[in-house]
Length: 210
View 1 (cartoon, rainbow, N blue to C red):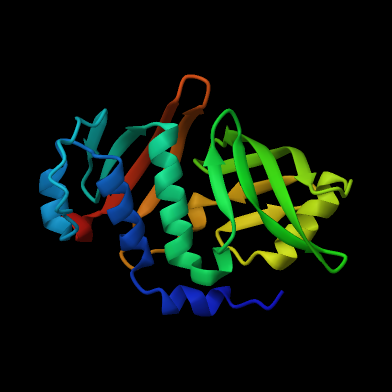
View 2 (view 1 turned 180 degrees about the horizontal axis):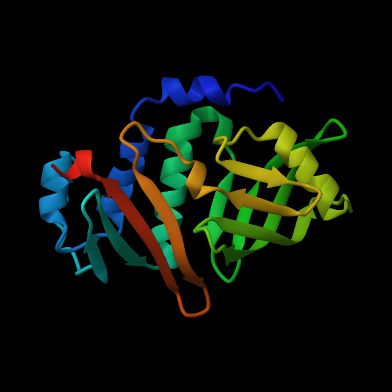
């Protein structure tokens, strides 16, 4: 797979703010309308915004927690991946239900084969997200998860902060490597799919809130 991810980082200037915009729009964070004004990312949807759980202000950053659910996360993830990857993510879909599912088509031995990868999300101590593969459906082929993940890593170009580890059989969402133009940072706090409770910290640097 040709490594074009460095180029894609510069070509998608401001993609971090598009990501922040999508989160602020779809997760409807109340009490943060003033923040949207400061960042010039207000939506015109006119929807009522519920109150966020927690806002912490320090000398050099503002940190707040977003509380959301599976339906909203599904919308955010797929909009972001379509925006970031364009045609490279065409035909692939992420579904958050009882597990995190990645669906689409892969070329296996010269044939286009529909696949479904089912993963369990685990929040790491550093705020990153590890998606541990539980099973994979790959048409009529019976391949070990590691081999299927290796094929996926060769055919699906992801942002460099999303990494496929075929040996350990997981996908790492490395929020600590997410690079935005304005140093926006994300940390995963909690994912409880059974309770439909998903919590994410967003950290804005001092320069973004002045």
